Image (cartoon, rainbow, N blue to C red; front, top):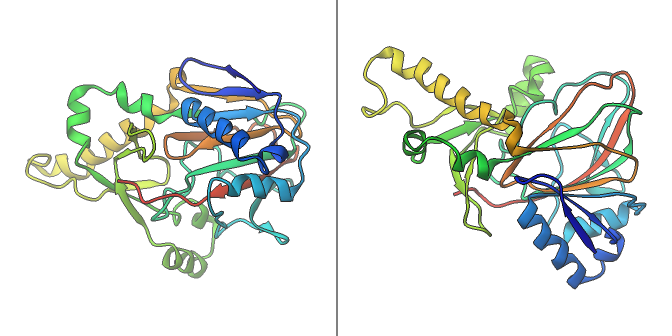
Length: 280
């Protein structure tokens, strides 16, 4: 197995390994997981593995989760089909951490390309540990005690009729998480807000709010500043897909953005997302 770092901040390409073999070999899996913790997202080419092997490999990390707004393969629960072919949908072309609207967001994902456009359709990943570390000290002091709400309603729910959107929101109520979380395996601090985040839950305190202008505008400006950190190129890696390419990412310390520049060409992906822990 060979590992080639792609940027100083994030990302590595692994060659000389087959994920089908890794699904059956604990030692090989351990090597891949170590590379993932170090590089935060890893890429493999030419992975002509079966759906069963895809699921078996992902399950070595933990149990898989379905998605309330996307279909799973009927034979493989937890293998979500992100198939963009019949209409343009803009759900993934924003910086996000998968499932931050859940009480337990995904630990990570294993995404395999089934079909991709001849040009375009890249995906960008961002190192949110680096994003936190490089914040000014006064911003870190302000946000360390803050908590924020994240919701599925204003993203996947926005295109639904009011009653359907209300059901989606009731079945998936907003989740509250720390704005700065601690990675459970590395101990690193992570900037933990994304496009699913709607507002701070505990901003309106005497330390933060003197007058009305400090309340909603002040909180929104701070949140928008934090969200903008994901767009800094120095924290990013960009990956060009080919059929049978695989990306594995640590969702606890990254965000990603699927570039929507390929319509009307199709783009079909199988994604296995691993159930995570509650951020602290």
